[in-house]
Length: 155
Image (tube, rainbow, N blue to C red; front, side, top):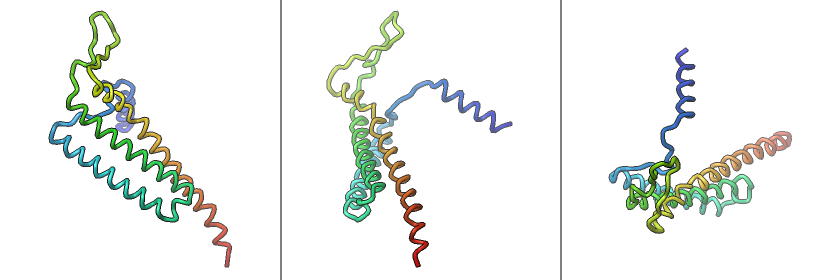
């Protein structure tokens, strides 16, 4: 009974969200650590992609998908870093609700605010990156099961 209650509660929480923010706001000390994590992710993914490209693995279609997903994840992390920096100088009254309307208006004061709101679409990089990882792993798994069966029959 208790698991069913939690499942219903979880579904209600998914159907009635309060806010959906693409960038998580961070306090200043948390932001610096978070930005360092993005930087180290970029560096480690870069070395992974370069090293994987230099090996024979890059000739396999599955690994080419994984390497492509790695490059997209590097772009995502870089775009998110820039978005976090732009968030520091963002005016709080850029989005406002004029009296008598139900739709909020966006008042862009400069190119930084415009770039910030464009970068909030970071899922346009992250989702394809995850799909490429998934597709690459699926191709590798299918390739291992099909190529391993003939090898087993050889003496």
